[in-house]
Length: 86
Image (cartoon, rainbow, N blue to C red; front, side):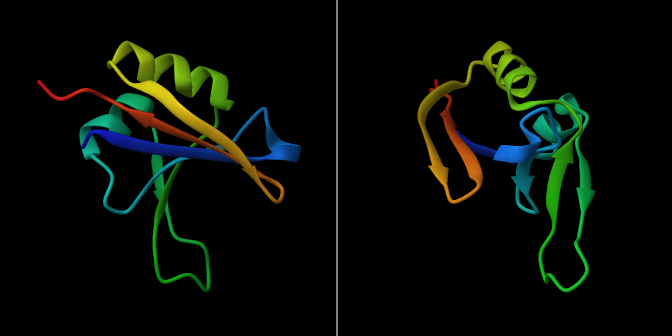
């Protein structure tokens, strides 16, 4: 998967960080140490880590991912990363 989205709440910029949805690459989620959770009332799952976004971004960079955009949506910070395919 060449794209990854990560996000965090502004008031929680020291973690946790949401690092993927239920369709995320399991190998990447394992590398990040992410846990899959389903919040009561939601019909979907998300992967989270306890680390702040900066550490997650550092880890993804070692896998070849680069930030292509970042934005704030309400109280949420979102980063989009891309990895070139060979």
